Length: 111
Length: 112
Image (cartoon, rainbow over the protein chains, first blue to last red):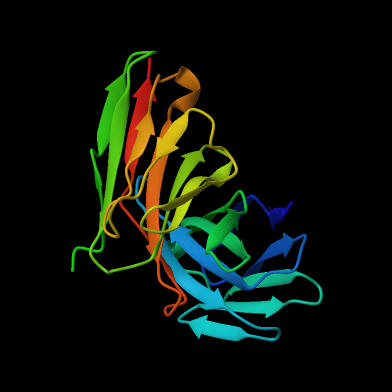
């Protein structure tokens, strides 16, 4: 059974600081996704990581994947208040797009 | 394109009532899924479909039925609602060509 663990579950940051969210998973996977969710809203796709060593960046967010360690990271650079949200990683196993989600990281960026 | 649409947005049921949550997509995606989101639990897969006429169970299927008669629609049925089914339900669709899953806006369901 695929298990996905995110940490930390809660993260309070100051604006301008850097931090990393970690996503560990238990079995071999085909794809890893990062999503953002604002309160009361749906999930917004941030990144899809397909292969070992994959790195993707969008603005102040950078995601990477190490399939050998079964670890993905979401790095936040110089945080701003607008990044406050819940971030989920999700791992796909098999070829039918079934996703197993982590519990999410609630990120609060304080001025 | 409207993407993935879900109706209703909100629903309150009494224990034992039945209802159907609707999900539709206009992207001609083969894969569609239903997830539920509970506080502190992330999203958990209820049922999924890899094409019209084909469905299968996910992680938490008990109490829910699905069918997929067309590519566009994937309704989720609660036959006898229970308070434990109070949750936010998300429908998603995806294509093997695109490396992305599109999520609908969600249905917030309360069972009293």
